[in-house]
Length: 66
Picture: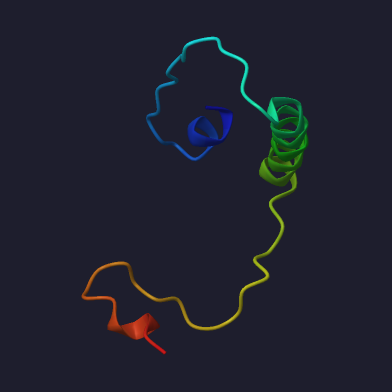
């Protein structure tokens, strides 16, 4: 929600049924670390590591075919 807001997107959160799933602790730890990383990326705004000419999202998609 924070990232969508910072990017100017309109987003809504949805609650789920509170149930315990296998591997949940691992996923929760991973999500905490990912949120922290994304929070700092929104502040620092590092340059993209991808190089090359931008590919427009309009069109048929053939520009990305190998």
